[in-house]
Length: 433
Image (cartoon, rainbow, N blue to C red; front, side, top):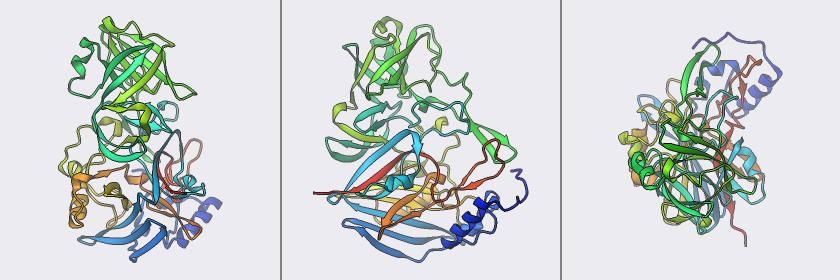
């Protein structure tokens, strides 16, 4: 990584240094965090607190051997006292802002979304695969994955097959995700095939200041071209419904132009016309009108440890499930309790880099938590929990985070409290009578 030398101390950097030292991190140079994050390798005293009825928070250091360690932050919620909502927004938000409402107790970063460093080429819907936002299904899954769902008022974490039904101008269709094994033959019998941002392929290039940049080539970011099909780009309306925005005989539709793309064999494509209304009826046997919120998750802890992650491909760029230490965010349910945990870490350290997928499975197994029943959320520099304690907003996880320079800026900016701009999260609210 070719990084410039120390820069003159900026007023914003001076304020950031003061804030970091108040957190207990003896950082000497904000710009230097882009090269060396050892100041964040600080072991924590064990703490346990009750934040609200049914809401418990704990922090502790976990030793990994050989001098390596991680700091674990755990939020346990009694579902009889707290309502958990999956929140998403295509424009993005900072996690701390979700704690502004009176009833909110805490917020936790959500699941995987599209991320690149090219502001000119971004998807209309960045949440990868299934997403339900405020009672409206925003995007359909391209492949079977675990998902967090609130269906009929009931919270569940389950495997969600990429199949379902929809209507276009009153005609009913079955649909299947484009990455499902049977997708290649599906259009022949009138089944529609779903494409979306999860079909894109993230690429990397060197950058003199940040080390690398992530991007997608627009000319490659299209549905496969073949003469026997018709593709329809489906847009989300202001009222929360869907309508076909454009039609592409022979394929080649822009994966980022709408919420998702529907493909039909040309013989069955009569209803695929611009302006036609699309009504999603069901996903994996679940009635769409009973879904209030949810999104696709990462793999189970067991699958990530075993490397069984074919559903998580080039749309994430470099796989976060390689056997390397990395900050991780997890979720699992036990009876009437839901648990969120961060294993924190900073990559540019010797001893405090997070945990590997196999270490996650081992650590949870020691607690009696079945790795098959716990799931990965977005980790790395997205890992963060924000909570209210005694009227104060506290932030844990990923406090080394820097915003990369944007032209014409040449400096990194510390954003450890705000964190990365997210497209999804979990908001935890007190149940009021």
